[in-house]
Image: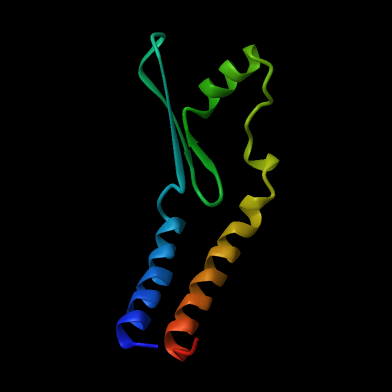
Length: 97
């Protein structure tokens, strides 16, 4: 594998570590009743933002309450991200196809 490819693979693998501090997903909801809008940010292990207000709206349309406990993925996500980072760095160091 070319050195430039190995560097790019290592950079991409290490860049995945950003997911441990930054939101993986962000949902913005806009309505006349909420001029500033509602925000739901999804991290690797929790929800943040206007979760309580969104849960209140979900009640009126028959949706379940959003809680961190509902998602077992939050328990394993940090390990999955770590494993992907290790595999990427290992692939860059080994350098074979």
